[in-house]
Image (cartoon, rainbow, N blue to C red; front, side, top):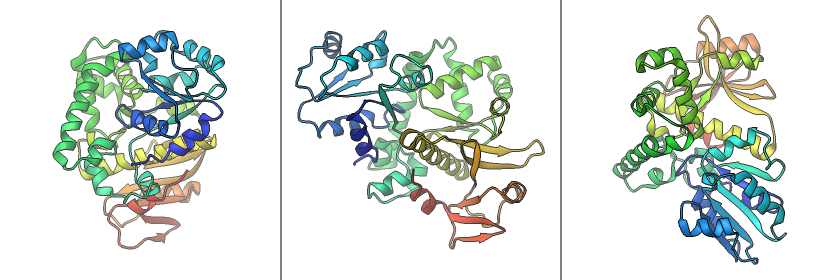
Length: 373
């Protein structure tokens, strides 16, 4: 199945190298190979393969190569300077596509030697909008039960999807976390991972987690940062014009794989909406260079709304997520009336869409399927 970002990546390859990043098994290698079909003399090299390593170190690919794909290159020592050298000396006709884990992504913030030489593309699991864009029938129930990673979503039955997820968790906690940082207490890390799965949608207290796991809040924060670096979870902070203050408040933590959420259907729905909105935000940033961010709203006296789409530090819309409640959220109305924020309540089971007290009650599947950059 074609990925929605393919054409945009091919377009960017014409002017700069492309760093394609995202969760493991989200389809980066498949997409890279699919893009390679558009180039008659493409070369794919994976740094995990010893023979490919020799070619990479020796730079012994043919001069006629028109697309060079380097996978898992971040495992190579001093890979950034290596890429800088390859890019600066390559033939003008050669395109350069780099794929790998989230570790590629974090260097975007460091002003490193690759600055000005690449475009970043973040490949996330399927969303209803992407499925709709590539003419696949959006299926909200399938996404809720299987998550949006290609293999479980496209599996013939739920058992195969569950088998994939078990393998994914085992690989994540036994191998992947050690590639990001030294984890000395793997059992504590596993416990944090499992506790987060059951706390999706609620503000997370590092102090509370630390007490449950019997480690320090600093260690909890480190574990969550490792999971972030691997694109396993993402953090949504409360909106505040003072960003420093916002970061000090309790975040909410969601999983890129909705299938990992342990909880009722409401928690899974909120997680799926969070991934969809984040994918929308990433698109705004990566393809339109617009200053978008995803937050939630919360006041000291307990008023809270699930999500706020923020553009240039101004709230563009606030969004509350419900399974079937047609009654408008009181907190949604509170923020709408007090701050004049455009308000949306997404409902999974809703017969008719309508407006009430200035807020829009919309069908979740329809809204998310039509979400565009």
